[in-house]
Length: 283
Image (tube, rainbow, N blue to C red):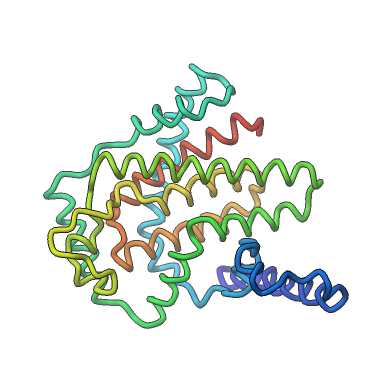
């Protein structure tokens, strides 16, 4: 079933690439110049130029996926409290402050050390294929893959509705980045590769460095916000979205960008933001 899903996703990318090529043959005068292409490439174009390699197996991503799934029910229950008090009115500033207050405090030093040991053990199992998959997911799992999924949805709905939903997803992703960055700066939990520079020697972390900070994970927050939003718009594709979310989360453990508590905290925050954006947008 997973193989079919991956083939379907790659087929969509291939079809978009073929369409773009055909259009270019018919209307070459509309092709952007080399200097403008870099600035104007869409998320779809960037993924067409750099399609995903073979990603991680289900058995690898399932454990962190289950931890992320557990945040969904928590988020729904918490958001019901916000909605009861505030209704459907948009107030990003107030919501951001409230959502930040719902995220648990970082784990104790003892617990975080135990999580670091798990990441260190995982690092010893890395392969060339795994690094390639993690690199692609780190690059595209922030925004582009979610924008591509929405692009697919928009092909099947009226243009005006699609434009509105594009703006809504953009708002959710922006809010996810804003709040997760604020919490990371407040809680100051060093990323695993800062605590143990041998995990990512290419990062060139200087002795005594404090950051970058990793609680909560920005990737996890954005992914959860996007999955919550996209799944409500297209429930039949929700399984695909959750699968990609799990891939993104696992990649962050695999390359020592985060420990598991960073990811679950980010997922909870992202789920809240997704609920919020759906509500204030009238979905």
